[in-house]
Image (cartoon, rainbow, N blue to C red; front, side, top):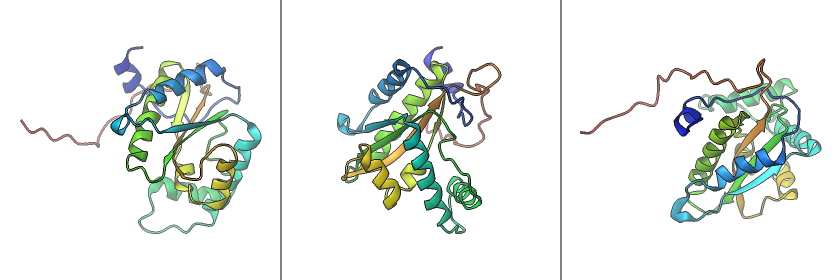
Length: 197
């Protein structure tokens, strides 16, 4: 699969098999993230790779509890609104029971923290597609970077006190009939282009 095909056929996977991934595949995805561009070539994005089921379950419970306590306003972002509503109903698992969650973090005071991590996350999603893995960008740890419970859990497994959570990515084997990611491109009706010739 060439680079353009990997980009154009990448889709989010939210239903994955519980089967563990070989470490070599996870490492290849991480290397793609580490190779991403960064402001001034700072290379300060950190990757916390979580595979331990009890940590994933604890994080899911903490995230659900934090979201269940939130109020939804008229300007609440759609994805956040959906997460809050699902948490209030109960049984919400933000990482869709994927066997791997990669949390990205960067220095809280660094102005390019989100941009650098976004580049890394995109590289990892494209690499996952090329490796026939399912992946999905996960924002919940970022939205809750200052929640005491979520933050405490993440600091217990490697998040530094001076860091902010910038995003997350789930990885796994797609739970599809053919075992491959859905690669049917979505129609693009947004993201307008302005040409200045």
